[in-house]
Structure formats: C-alpha cells, structure tokens
Image 1 (cartoon, rainbow, N blue to C red):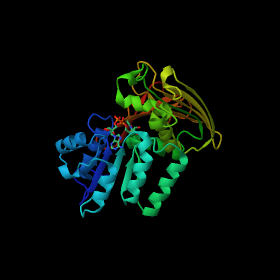
Image 2: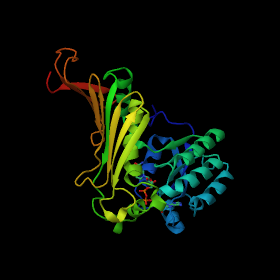
Image 3: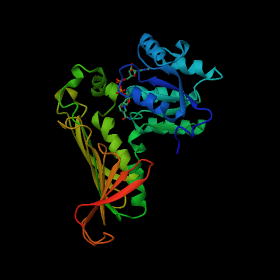
Image 4: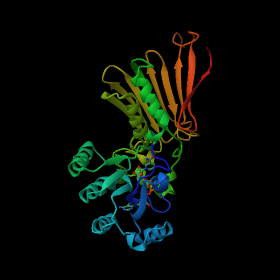
Length: 327
Ligand SMILES: NC(=O)c1ccc[n+]([C@@H]2O[C@H](COP(=O)([O-])OP(=O)(O)OC[C@H]3O[C@@H](n4cnc5c(N)ncnc54)[C@H](O)[C@@H]3O)[C@@H](O)[C@H]2O)c1
C-alpha cells in the first residue's frame, strides 16, 4: 500500500482534460492525484474556454505554457517534451470520452477516463484493443471501488462466508434532480441531452457505479436482463431519470438495480445487498467503512442463533468485527 512515506521515486507526470473551474468532478481528480505523491500535475486542457483554463491552471500552479486551449494541442506539445505527461485523466462530458481517449492512447499516454466510458460496447472494445497494442493502462473512474469494505466483501464471498449467491440488489437512487434543475445548472443540462450524455441519463450516470461494484464483489456475469425506464420530468425524454433493471445471472442468481435521480429527499442511496444461501452482506456508500453480515440463524459461532456482524474499518487499515443484534 502506498502512503506519504512510501511514494514513487519519480511521481507520474499527469495532465487533465476537462475538470475545469466549477466542474463537478475535476477537484476529485486533482485531489486524488495529489494524495501520497504518486502523480505530479503538470499540464491541462481543462475547459472549453481557453482563457478560463489558463487562468484556473495558473492558479493551480501550472506553468502558463502548459495550460492548453484543447486536448489535441496538449497531446502534440507534451509528446515533444522530455518531461511531457505520461498519463492523462479525462473528465469531460460523456460524448467526448471516446475521441479524447483514443487520441491519448495514440499519443502513448496512460489513460484514466471518466464513466460512462463510451456510448457503446464497440467503442469501448476498440479502446481496450488500442491500450493493449500500445501497452498502456486504461482505467475507468469507478472511484467507489477504493473503499476497503468492497474488497472485504469480495474476499468473504470468495471464501464462502455467505454460500452460493441467490439475489443481488443494487441501487444508486439520489434525489438531486427531482425537479428540472437543468434549467439553471449547465452541469446537469448536458446530462439530459442524448447527443452529449449518450443513450441514457441515470443508468449511465449512476446505475453504472452500483452495477460495477456488485460485479466486482460477486464476480457474477449477466445472462439476460429487462429494463423499465421513465422520464418523470417529461422534458428529459427520451432519457430516463428513473429505471429498474431485473437481471438473470449465469449460474442461477437473480438481481435488481434501481437507478434514480428523482428519489426526493435522498442523498446518494447507493447500496449493494447480496443474499447468499447462508447469510447476506450489505454495503451503503453513506457509511462506506461499514459492511454488514447478517444471518437468520444457525451459523453464529458461539450461540447458534441469528446474528449481525458489522465490520468496521479502523485506523491502521484493520477490520474490527463487533457483534450486534440478536445472538
Ligand atoms: N466517477 C464519478 O463518480 C463521477 C462523478 C461526476 C461526474 N463524472 C463524470 O465526469 C465527467 C464530467 O462530469 P462533470 O459533472 O464534472 O461535468 P461538468 O459539466 O461539471 O464539467 C465538465 C468540464 O469539462 C470541460 N470540458 C467540456 N468539454 C471539453 C473539451 N472538449 N475539452 C476540455 N474540457 C472540456 C468543461 O469546460 C468543464 O470544466 C462526465 O463523464 C461524468 O459522467 C463521474
């Protein structure tokens, strides 16, 4: 594990496309890159407005000459430098991911790309093949996978703590767009435009996170699915602001995903619940350092009754189990 003492001798020289002043996700990329001194932020094409990019970049400590008006100029200038960027994050609206990621790989850069990675599978597969050909890393920003409890859950399932998986419930159902906020919010407006957002709003924007997490934890592969999508704010049609997906997984497990932007009164409500034959596991991103293992009876080590075991992360990265509920 990296920490501030055990850092890279030569931090990776890193650039950012998109994520300019006032953007939603730009700060998360810069803050994550600055942690533990693994990356040095040296160049950016962060904004559709070149002047704003330059002003913002200089305020963030970039050399004025490395605040670029667009990504093409940035890649071609940076490849000519001995100290040019080695990796780039792409934090622009969805429609641009494919072309920027392709150009970055062609410039021999490692790529960290925002989700949803592309509009369709064939574009994503093309990028995967290009990354392999160029021997470059291609990462997609499923940031919640950094939570330790996600990996704890994966290990518990692998070693059989809950038995064979029967049901997987996934949800990412926030309430921030229960009214037409896009009228006044440019960051929300493009998300409702199929040309920029892609064929989906909330499934691609948020449902993808819960789906990816559940896949990482369980390893299950989808066999078939059906989906019901709605635009409760009518002006968003044909894009959905609420959806339910029902899955059949290979091996017999089943699942559901609720993705919503109109869950009024809710923050994230990203939850994963996995029901096995012996017990269930549950994780909620509003309490990310906790994982709940529950059984309805019979397997509690010292009483034989139903139990609830919460695993909590402690300083020092250890998991501390504690008993609660009926024993
Ligand atoms: N992983 C996550 O949890 C998460 C969270 C939020 C957003 N996102 C993703 O991040 C991406 C950006 O979302 P956002 O909410 O920050 O958008 P935003 O509208 O808030 O910001 C977009 C930024 O990109 C800049 N930009 C747009 N086109 C550009 C181009 N061609 N070249 C350079 N800069 C350009 C804009 O000027 C702006 O600074 C989206 O794909 C979104 O799905 C991911």
